[in-house]
Image (tube, rainbow, N blue to C red; front, side, top):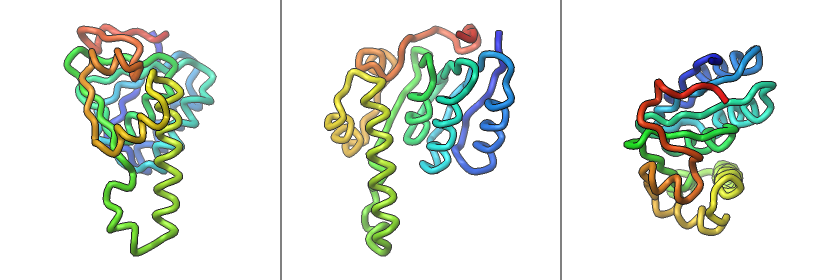
Length: 165
């Protein structure tokens, strides 16, 4: 069956615990995702841990995967969502006024946005420039549309029925 992990808010403490469990896993992993996002920097760390896992990670969206959680989902070998789930991504630099006080922060946010868009474009049927445009529009996809665009690989009725790859 594999080990079951849960991703909620993406922040330092929760991501550190998930990374430790992923790195020490001796079996396939199911990552249940119900997250409004969080820190892009910590999402990047989790993304790398999932990509470098010795065992396949299946990401299962049950409810919502927003912002940085969409980025994490794209690292999973198999991406699944329940029928009524929603996936939404947006521009990292959505509040440019905040970043204008610190040009270094703005450059970092722009790099993070490019990396997220590239990862989403690589795994989906959406080109890089279209991903950037959709990020700026704060686009929400429900499961059938997310499947059509290649943001997920499969839709299931119940998340509890998903087994590791």
